[in-house]
Length: 413
Image 1 (cartoon, one colour):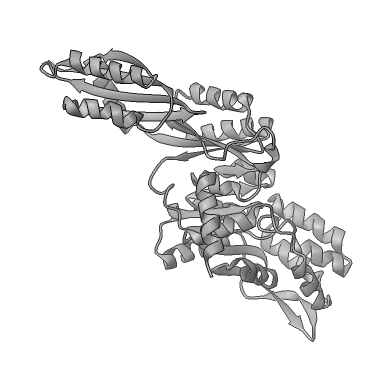
Image 2: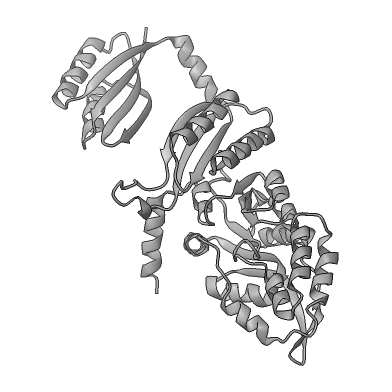
């Protein structure tokens, strides 16, 4: 008759602990059913779930483990596991799993406590907690502008949108971002990211900048704000705003392009994704002149935006070709994904306005970035407290991974 035993090991971490203990188990041919280890500030917590047969001489196994552990300054605890409880635990492995990402300028005990309370309210079990950002120096805390903790949770969620809403509301109260994603193969294999441009990749609405130069700033700005809130039809309002730019000198476009305010974290995000082989697109309701400027700066693969018509060095107040509105953005996202041979689940879409909602809805990871309230409420994920590089942590990347990528980027010719 076999017996299942959980061995808990605690003590100061050092090289060779796992090797020493598992070599003893191997000597007695003891099967390891599960193993897990974590270390915080050199404090080790190691768990070994083993099966001891009736003829495996369990007493000598325990004796040798205790002797070795004592010599290494470790504490061991042996807990017999009921066979029925073990089988129930095995059967739980098919349960849905989700990843909760807690992201902010800093994360304290209240943030974690409140998120953990929501997890408990939805009867989810936390399997693992990991810090993705680097260790924080108390002497120079400003070296780490971001903080991120990732929770792996297990259990069925009857209404995932309801959980999203609960975490979004909590994040707004605590000034942190909390995202929940299904922990599936697509989360770990994104391949394309599609950005809105104005107020996403850049911290400006270019049409408002053009309008200010044309002397119609307040009128155009009011229309832009109402459109991004979803109060006006995009195409109609767009034509109206562009018409107000008629007669503006083309040289103004050059000056505005040269001083586009790039969003915090955009450089780090795009450089990292390009080094990992991601394809990158701009799908913008703005203008190609400025999107092409960003294409050259960042090495963007695809650019789709609206082309301003110019005659004799002056804007005509019209655009050529099909207007890129919300439905067109979603259509373009589908076309690019098909061209690249990837599934929509492998696509990331990022935007802030109502005309971004269609593409956010169909992408595997749709992110409302510092978005208008209507977008934040409808999008599945939201970033409102950090820069664009926060997306890297939603993909499960760690600071040490990103440091390696940065060094690789510096070595490239």
